[in-house]
Length: 216
Image 1: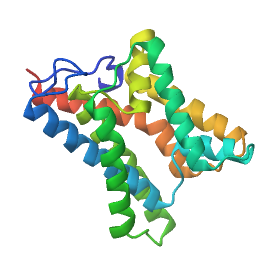
Image 2: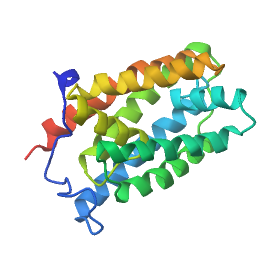
Image 3: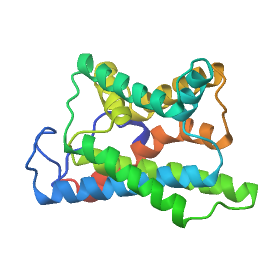
């Protein structure tokens, strides 16, 4: 059952080390493919106008209670999460850098080319598709084992420390973040809740499918 998955699977195109600066071509191709899909999903969530991601709600809530901009707070949150990697013994890799670049490009492309649905239920449907898309891309690029983005790396590190299923760890993390953001005054939409409760299972499902399809 995919909800019980506790480890990132290893397939033939997984890198042997996350810090490998000269990975095999297949590892690099799949990490880029995963991040493109991941970024496309992030863009769809924004375009859907069904609700911001949990971490954006947290940044918004902190901004309401400080004199700092949401952009600056988002940056500070990312740095803080990366610092939390240290006790969790997580290591950055090529994908950590590509994560920021590729996702930013894909979000801009989505906003430019994909219109926001006019119907409310169509917006919710697009939000649900966005969560599944982010999960699919997340699973693919994590299996490449070339490092992770700040949030995904935190998830993997916490899973190793707790030995809980990946889906549960990510759900607890996202729900905690959105709860704090909401308490501080951030705006929570239906899409926000779909992401908070759905991204963990979506990533776990992706890991399961990738393992079934490409296992050694």
